[in-house]
Length: 324
Ligand code: F6P
Image (cartoon, rainbow, N blue to C red; front, side):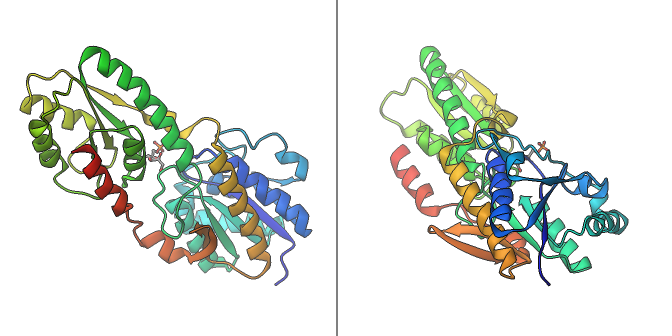
């Protein structure tokens, strides 16, 4: 089937660089002579028929902004067959032949189901700060998020130093420790707690005891998804174990989702968006586009969804050497 009209949307948690990706999809569409429609508010917008045509000028002056001009949502309605049927009717009424779906795991799951049910070709672009998608080295938004977290860690380090305190800084990552690992290494954290590893509390406590160089203050980074508990629980345990310390907790939260995308995120998003359109027109679908070792790759949705992307083990080992 010849593709003449493409729909693009962002879905799930927003990520800095999503706008750059939307821009790339629209501009690549114009380049290849296809019409592009923006679907506003993710799958929910598809159900509510929030669909408008976009031109090259619709995406002017957005590359530098966080958030997403197309808005985003986590749609419960799309999980029901009735919701998806309604969405499909709206897509067909606009004569949209294919979709570029920018988001994370939930977005890919929706796209895979939609394509299986209605045969509409879908291609995914990895957009989530968590970097937890299989089939790409990095996701759109991750680089900006770790830099935002790093900026906060550096600031907290000043006050930790001034007061001789121990800080537990919680970063995002619902089920994964990628943000914690990268921000923790870059921020010189003394210990990192991530869901992919076990017994960090024991290891970190033992090291804390052994440290000969009379440390005055400490920074620990905790992933939101850490199985030992959130930063508050870990800090409480630590305080009980080391009553002589004065500990504090900072939860960075949604600050990590916003802000100006970094150069790396803008470039990644531009490459992924442009390749998504090109490859759709060349017949690719049912896949997520990614970049591995600087090469564009395609991963079937089911693999991108169900395979776990491991943390970089070499970084973990290296960090343990540098911080012990
Ligand atoms: O998936 C991105 C993410 O920011 C996670 O790190 C976090 O757990 C979740 O989204 C928060 O979602 P919401 O904004 O819906 O509360």
